[in-house]
Length: 358
Image (cartoon, rainbow, N blue to C red; front, side, top):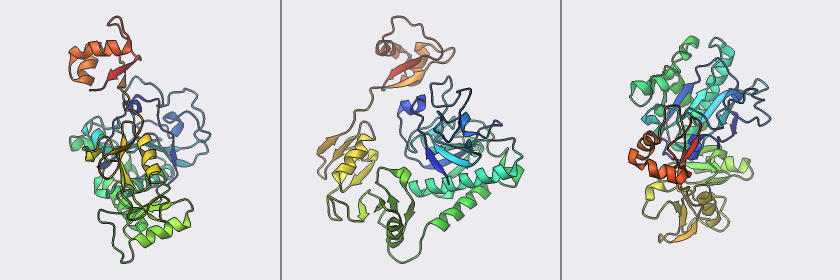
């Protein structure tokens, strides 16, 4: 897998700032004969190529759409993956409740008849799914496509990817089977050492840098062997504690610093760290989070969460309708007016409004 990262910081979905706990993966395809990543991902980073129409998705848009990644062609014709949202960010890809539970990625379609291109993006998608399964403790059984999501009542009525895969002798059962093989081949589950109590040993540069993860192992010896082959990498248990090599400023017996929104809200925990600096870094990467010691005392406060989200006005919108949709009550439109300094109820399509937190 050729994984790149270009986060869509200008897309309204990213600015909305909502997080999820990934429980599944949804496979999409774009439905347009354009295999080039530059159509959707931008601006050009030197590998994508220039989009002469500047209609990529990393900008304010009239539609509420955004997935977590795209697979397609770079300017040199090679196939790659681009992550465009943090994996635990709530995307706008499913058109249903799967947005609250699933990571979604789009495969850029061509004319649907090129077997060489299909085989390359299919393999890239298998490897991406295996990577995400290892990262979030999922299996191939947690993977569906958009059309399967619709059948389950959690996504809108789209046919992807079952209008494309069967043309090349594939379906989602075959795809899931390929992911299962990929997971088995990369697990390194040989040996007799026990796994950590709650799961896997993960090899990363730091606990908070999930994108750097090289693998997740049930056997500690296999994880340490991989870390030894990759200078700058370490092994972390499921709580985020660095178990190999011994963390500077911490040890296996050190108390843990936990990163949460509040001490009482354990469900929001992003990680538990033996090293305070690592915990602080994680808190800074997640606005609204703080670092707590073992007794629940705040030892570091990260960046404040934004006091608002944003909404791009669509044709036919009114302040009342926007308030009803985003805040639950149309009568709260006055709050939107006040936050945006509006002196009248006049708004226009494409206008970006600040929306108060619920």
